Image 1 (cartoon, rainbow, N blue to C red):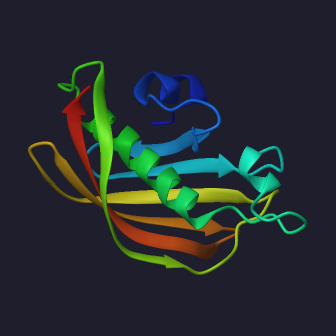
Image 2 (cartoon, rainbow, N blue to C red):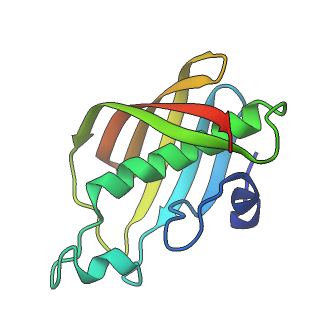
Length: 145
């Protein structure tokens, strides 16, 4: 299943400049998701991170992975009410292996490891040109707003 930006915006509450995923290229409910984020020089944080040497912030890589897991969680459980909120609650084993710069395409993948009631645990990675840029274990929780 593929999902375009308009559908992503129906699922996630994030908006510019904080929506950090552009397109879902593959989604297997209750299993995994693959997402694309096109990195452009127009991103507002590049003005200060870092002038003359723009680098995509590591904390935003983690947020992009969390947004991808939120889409997977919502699409995997149709019982979630419209208006429910997916909260990023835990990061473990985060590792940054490569800088991400303007012009790169981040290929984000996440695999569901475990779910219990409203808690979801994932393994996630970001690759650029086939090279690992970031990896982490993430947890999220779905709650009412």
